[in-house]
Length: 393
Image (cartoon, rainbow, N blue to C red; front, side, top):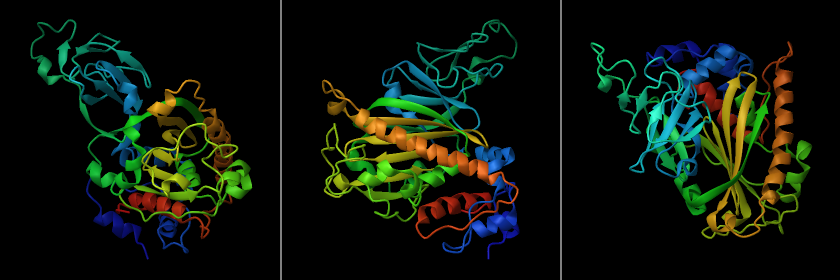
């Protein structure tokens, strides 16, 4: 039986225990078939979210698509755990990341989601200016200030990685990126993600904890109850989850005979990606790259959800649809066949997640068991619970 006290004793000195019920945590860490969901406070308590920002959201985080910063001198500020990250493409074409805080008084260099196209990074508060490599150019009023060396006041760097067209940041707490995504390259390689073009993005504010949303994504046990459109094109009991590797979980579901993709009528107005094999052409893969990105790989498009926890009971979700360049550039191409389907399905999911969040606030609620079809939920719950306990998953 799991012993939370022993786990705390064995944890690194920098680690602190999550503020959750140790008995409920032990129940969440039992083997599949015996376990329960995470402790109730994990979904309701702002102190738990603060712990997660410190311990779960300080490693590798998905920020967005690299196509958002395609040209030199483009810059954008992204929400990323505790505070934002400013990403800049230099004149040399290299992407660099920095903490989104001026070295003077901490003012944000760009507002969250803000974009700019400038020769320098200039703080809007007191006009401190930085080169695109983060070094300080000048600070008004400090020219002759004693004991002030501009070389000591460059922006704090944040590690970046471009991967299949997505951009990730790490503040130094994560393992090597190769370990983070171990095993995923072979799953994504035929989709040519770096060459996809985002054609539309929707933003949703969902009144639910971010973990409720990830858990919902890991199972189709709920699909017959709330997703009639999805069930018409994909059998809810099809497919299998993959053995957990790295910091991701997921699996695939099949398309019904005669259905080309996930759309309201099963038809595609796009085109099957050219390098997909026969199995990939009949499968939709659902991958959660933890902690904050959900990737849905379709035969003709890729949908991505990026999650930003706002409070313990509110999550902002940015959902985007990307297509092959030649499809997106085709005259008269209309992506609504995919977007309309998933906007309906997303909203069905968000409604269910918000109801779960409200239900968990009732005084009598205790964490429930997992159904045999919820092995993907178990993988996620075990991942989070292990980190709450100071263990590797």
